[in-house]
Image 1: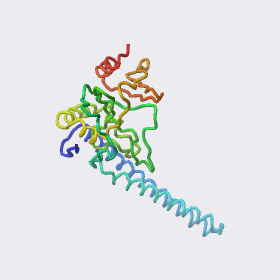
Image 2: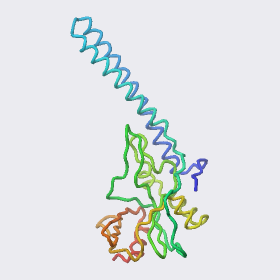
Image 3: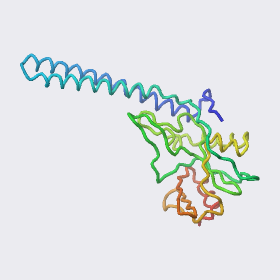
Image 4: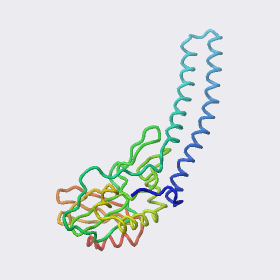
Length: 244
């Protein structure tokens, strides 16, 4: 399922705003850096004319060039991010079991307890972008509903996290569209499905006090924790997993 870039959804506007603000901030920073670089170059010339060792002036020139180059690189990386690049379908085996059917969904979730993203020079990717859970009659799956920038870090900002916080309705609507128009196999493929565990593998299901989070532990001891954005979905998750 490809995200329609023509739709002015809240998630789309949020991603574009983050990138636009990042570019504007970097442009302003670059202007200040250029002013500092000019000052450093002036000092370098002054020190050289004053007879100080050449490496003092050379060091100031190198610093001036370095800070300008750094800001230019960060600016270009921020501006070059394609927010509408489609989330590529999963390449691994996400084939559901024969006869496996979808029973329920928990939209607008965010995994916790793991490193969520990595970034270099304020641009990077989200390692755990999944934002919905699917419960079938045989297993629990995590999927990523495609939204602009859902798996990207732009200007040091995890866009998927902000979409979970303030554009969760787009996650809900996107998931509804996926499950109403695609087969279970295609939903898992387009949403880069991750099979967390079979229903018969669930060792325990718990919540954290004073939060809307659930933790599912597999028979082998591996746990998966998710924060659930809406209270009604959190309550439904508790009912699904028989959590008091």
